[in-house]
Length: 326
Image 1 (cartoon, rainbow, N blue to C red):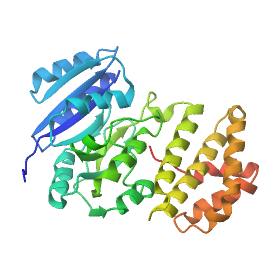
Image 2 (image 1 turned 45 degrees about the horizontal axis):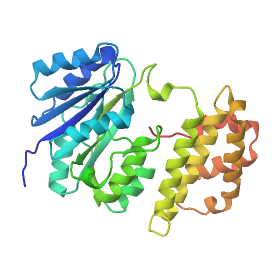
Image 3 (image 1 turned 30 degrees about the horizontal axis):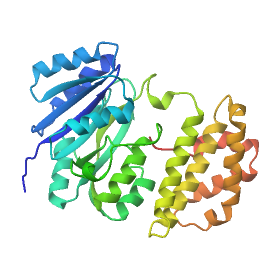
Image 4 (image 1 turned 180 degrees about the vertical axis):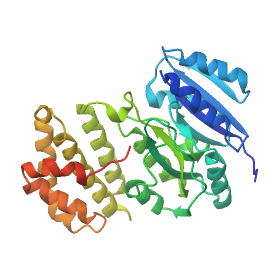
């Protein structure tokens, strides 16, 4: 087995401004050197494409692909189709990598022979966080534990960006998503079903920058609700009749609670009154089964009861009790 395989890093770039150069420098500073870095200029209009071109002149491992804006999935898909590495990772053009991220994830893939390895990521605001000294633990999640972890272990995260994938996984899984929100979860669910397991390195390897233009700061839109519900239903449907059915039911029910709380947290909650009523109806209908589900936490079971009978008090409590992952 090749111990120093080429790793393709796909960097999605769209109007990332002053954040782009630190991102590219964090990739160039990786201790693992055998990289090709595909900078996908996804229709930028702020000069980000020129920053990519200039960086490619500095480091021959970097190359730029300019294209019209094809969205997040379309942009990353371009990177996948042009990649030549045995492994592939994804980076958003305003984020940062720990200098050991690629090396540690690759070593776990090679030592465990698993085609996916992941690590933790953290959001940050303002100053760049200081890198951690090293991993706290190494885990091997064999099938179906890796799918269960994707649903419930917040260290694993939904994101594509805190993981390293064997490139041949994408020969079996089309790089496609019918949704705009929770698209990473949709793709990871499909990818990990073909992976047979994943390795996990318990350290912060990816730093997700939060700023005014981040997707997490956008006002609530109807599609945010319908897309997330579609993905949760897709996961539940594919888990039916298998060892993860009860776990997927808990995941789906938790998503109902989260989306309901998302509406209640909005100043314009009345604009989503029909969606709120529909979610609350489904929460009530599934309450009895949810209370018996061992995969649903006590906090979520309490949230479910408050959702049904807590009235105005629940709207004030839900933000403290419920969290979701990117």
